[in-house]
Image (cartoon, rainbow, N blue to C red; front, side, top):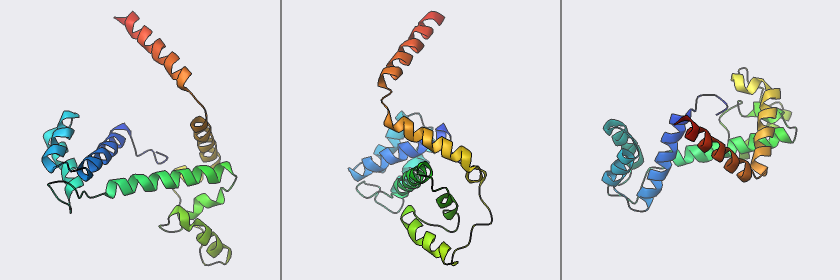
Length: 170
């Protein structure tokens, strides 16, 4: 999200593969997965490719999917939530540590100590989204705020407004 390379279509593909992985864990075969994806609007080639990704290295009969996409989503959530907490708590220096090497959020305390000892140097290059720490902190603070409040009444009000607007346009 922060890199602006995850659009709605990519997120949909990841979510659909996560659902397909769960289906395969529960016994769905390659053919079942292909059918699920076709019903979800995928063309034959895209549905085949997504089902193949779930079954690669596993069993086409179901029961043993390849879970790379689940691992990817898990890592994305863990790193994003770590960054959110670190920034909201004022630890902007931790953002740069993620670019000192391929590390997990759980590695940050170790990398922090290694940096203090001069064994880890600051990264030479950062992606654009990580350079503007003021924006990143504001963004993460706002998303943390949104996660803490109940917007269900607002959502219903706006759903009603949209339904009313669509009715007026007909």
